[in-house]
Length: 463
Image 1 (tube, rainbow, N blue to C red):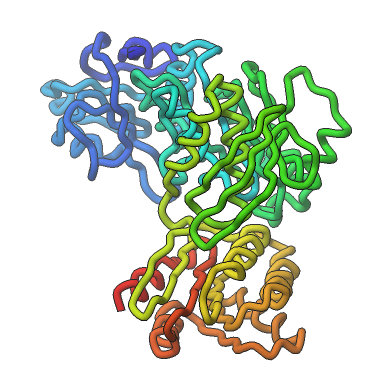
Image 2 (spheres, one colour):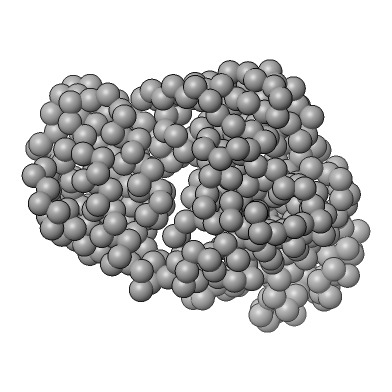
């Protein structure tokens, strides 16, 4: 394990030692006193409404051996008798980024760091890549959706004796991915696609592409892996020359890694993987064409890291999804519930509707909620979701929230003869669904995370 001491942190962050031991080794970092363990390094994060640094006494009481704090005044008597180490910095978020970058650099520029970004599918792609890479290396990966300026540094600081790191990079605005890249310094970068997520902040898909391409600013970058079937990524590749190698995956456009003879089923799929000049079969334990793309990407990453084909096959077959992403439950009367409610954009809702169309069941019910952070494009994209509902011939539409009323109105305007209902909140939708569900129904739950559709999932699962 690469060690960081209090003395290192003081130098990295230009910090001030309030009390304690400069030789103390800092291993496990935590920003939440509720889950802090004895021996942890507590980092007091300042948010919009609360300064976590003010909880340093609670952290020390629970066994924190080091505290990194900002904007705190200390009582002389407390500091005099304190047995823990306290470091004062100007900004704890800035400090944790600098410490994480220092730790990443301890592992050397050739230490495999794979960074994943894209409008849709970042987390599931990260998960499947990590599963593949783990068949040859000991892997640390981003947990859940900790893909921002706070989550990514804390992920890197978990590095101990791992041999590879797979991180997810999210963004809402320009400059955010570049900030993360400067911390993680990936040598392999992945862009899954360019869609419409956060278009309200960035103004166009072209600007989203520009923001995602900040991932190539890593000074260690050797390989960029992109989805060659995505229109903007394909166009960018054809119009630009790079100092690093660009590798491609796809189903339609000729690519380094391709899927042929695809066989989709409800909860899995199979395809023939053509990886350069080799062909081998891949089993994917999740249904949906978008997971074919994720698998192709993971196969390409595995190949770059010198995994053999059987290791790639095993990694894909054994990968597990992060919760709330295509989480499938069977309840009474053979009813299938598909919970894909962690996030929603036009692109991901379209993919989810295409998926449930192929799932075996008597009736297909789409429960759709608001798609957030779309700004001036919100009305247009919610209308387009209504069009996708009709195109995929789903039987029943249930919309929940304010913006989703646009989806409902869009479906009605297309003279759709299917059933459609709208509710203001989850409670109303839950009560309705409990009364109308029939044997062999298939239900999709899809909305932005802020709509809390997991509440609907849990209530239906247990009714």
